[in-house]
Image (cartoon, rainbow, N blue to C red; front, side, top):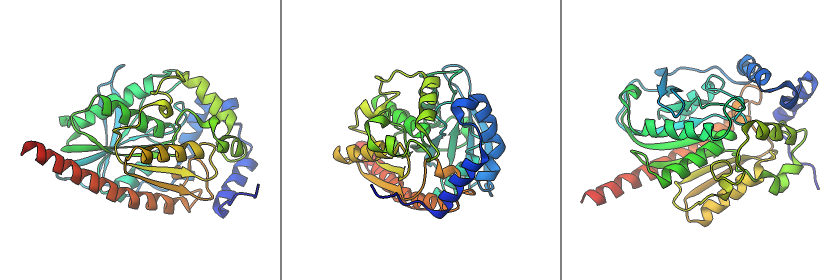
Amino acid sequence: MSEPFVRADVRAFLDYMAAAGRPPVQEAGHVAQRELMRATRDLVEPEVGALAVMRDLAAPGPAGPIPLRLFDARADRLPGPVVVFFHGGGFTIGDVDFYTPLCAEIARGLDLPVVSVEYRLAPEHPFPAAPDDCEAAARWVASGAAELGLGVSSLVLAGDSAGGNLTIVTAMALRDAPAAVPVIAQWPIYPVLGRAKDHGSFEQFGQDWFLTIEAMRFFDRCYAADAESWRAAPAIGRFDGLPPALVVTASLDPLRDEGRAYAGVLAGHGIPTVFREAAGTIHGFMTFRRAIPSAAGDLAGCLAALKPIIVEAEADRVMRQAARAG
């Protein structure tokens, strides 16, 4: 097998990480890894940048208030789609603060409000706490609650890694029991589908490419999910009736092939699907845009691809609503 293509800035990042000698997450533990992420955000991500709105909110959840953060490039806007974002981190690490630079750029790039969800993390709150919170938060946003201060016509669900899983799971839940407004698009970024080990990329890139098999197994132990539930492993769920999708993978990611498979299954069900694979880069690249500068171009390309998906889906929603009313 030929050597895979690796971008120069990705190779430099991987070499730096190897030389730094930091213990892997399965040795350091989830608490230390959370602290490390908070401490290194500004080393790996660009500045948050200008926004008209960035404020914290809370949605009612099954175990108490769910913290949210609203990002908007505009101080005022007409009712329209709202992006609900679920962060990554193996259901165990990651938070709204670490993802603030990314969510701010999504809000600017799409010119849409973004609501980032601080769902409960394992192992303190194992499965199904995360999907419970994400579904509750999405339903609250869809309701257009006064505290949100926005008119909401539809939802766009998005997230990376574990958040990609939660994007798909929430889309399935809101398909089966619709919220106050429809989900018109989904954007899973290098998502966890629950069947990674069934694909070749799991072994091919499971060592030395940032996300390792050992780390994934650690996250699985923390999350303690029911592997036979579609709410943990959406790969075994129903795909009909899901919203249009932009599915994003990284070519050097052990999760690459199950993301590819998800895009293929959606297309096979007749769901409008755009698939983008970032060549020569690793899992997590969206949140390493300072450390891996080429990732900024990947994000820009994704936002450019997602815009027409949203515009077309929102127009279709409006036409269907008018037809029902007529």
